[in-house]
Amino acid sequence: MSAERDGLVIAHLGKGVAVEGANGAIVLCHTRRRLGDVTVGDRVRWVACDGDLGRVESVLPRTSCLLRPGYAGKLRYVAANLDRIYVVLAPLPEPDWLLVDQFLAVTEARDIDARLLVNKADLTATAGSDGISARLREYEMAGYTVRAVSALQRTGMDALMSELQGQCSMFVGQSGVGKSSLTNTLLPERDLRIGEISEKSGLGRHTTTTATLYHLPGGGDLIDSPGVAVFGLAEMNWNQLAWSYREFQSLIPNCRFNDCRHAGDKGCAIMDAVNRDKVSAARYQRFLKLGEKLSSQMSGV
Ligand SMILES: Nc1nc2c(ncn2[C@@H]2O[C@H](COP(=O)(O)OP(=O)(O)OP(=O)(O)O)[C@@H](O)[C@H]2O)c(=O)[nH]1
Ligand SMILES: [Mg+2]
Ligand SMILES: [Zn+2]
Image (tube, rainbow, N blue to C red):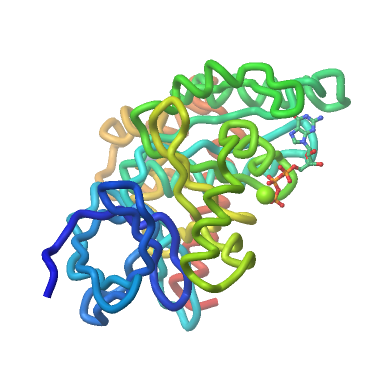
């Protein structure tokens, strides 16, 4: 049997995973059942088998992972070893702020950095963009970095590219905000890689429906996840949700009661900060909404 080698999972292909070896070559690998799910971003040890195939022998410890709800309540991996998520939004389609907060909360709870990326900066004259600016200031107040770019006009893309270096990042956000356009602008080699993976897997072009990891020309990795990646709030409870709102973290220890739910409780430091305009009332209202969503999930509704 051949020796074990290091590899990086760059795509999940249904019947196996595409593993990039240390020399950059891509090998289709099967995984041992006892390993459980192996996901894009995983660092693995693998051996060469018959023909061009390989087998994953072990998965190295993950520094982070994101999960989503799958069939029959089973949690599935979205990606592993991510350093940062960019929540992409745009003047059009109109932002879904509850979805933005859900992305930010799950990411925070998983110890992954998150930033806001406002695409379509060329549309600033669009009706409603004043409202967006006001909202974005609330996120800055909460401790988030906000960057504006235009994939179409390629403004702000160089600065974004240098920020992506040395990190493994992923773009998420509602449909139509421009995640694919941004990825295409950043990754001139993207189609080549998709072609290579398709060829290896023998599955043809439809492998582009899977999350894929790309190396950026300037260094760093970008995971392109097709469609809207939904990370479940599933494994979170009310308490963890409160801690995943960045601007609540320094306040929670000041609530009068240890078991404060920050929802009408006496002496709540978060509600007090909302009343003094120190915390965005809109963010606080969305926290309550997401909390209700959690509670209804837990009771099986
Ligand atoms: N005006 C303008 N339009 C843009 C920009 N970036 C993308 N678009 C347009 O927005 C539309 C949606 O872009 P996509 O890149 O497909 O969006 P997406 O986020 O990948 O959408 P899903 O794959 O459905 O989740 C396309 O028609 C793009 O041409 C931009 O910077 N400015
Ligand atoms: Mg897309
Ligand atoms: Zn409280």
